[in-house]
Length: 187
Image 1 (cartoon, rainbow, N blue to C red):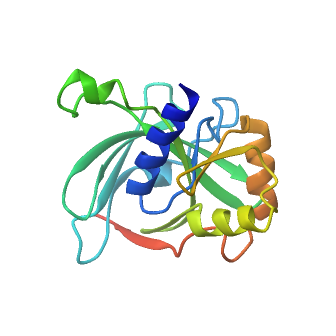
Image 2 (image 1 turned 60 degrees about the vertical axis):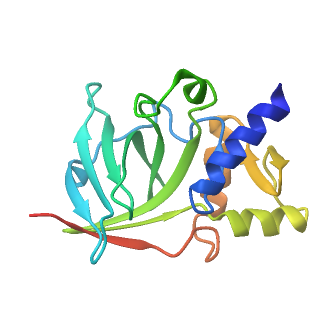
């Protein structure tokens, strides 16, 4: 059963353009901070990609309506934390109602993705933890955190505290995160 779950998670992660998924959250409710500057709609130039951040009912997290380059929407929930000088957003799926049929819904798991963000006025830059970087560390036997490998995908399985220590250790590494994508605040 565990292998089936890992396979499904890896398939979902592959779709997410090379992100490194985690079974456990990177940000707990206790660690979460709220940055009002994230609220609003952010768009990518010459693209249908956008993200609308609203304050969640708990007052410390966000609901995100994200639209990909094809214009397809996804509902996410997110928590923000600061580690050192960096801000990180932990996103997971909010609802599976958009999926047609219960059989598909039974196969979905709420994995967590980590995104390093920079907020400067009306500019939001984000970069996800990079799959290729994690794969290279794994090949060199230097991936120093609990993980599973399925079909060449790395899935982090460590508890939150260890995930945060791992991120803090590697946050400044040039290749740890993908090249940033820039969004502008929609006015």
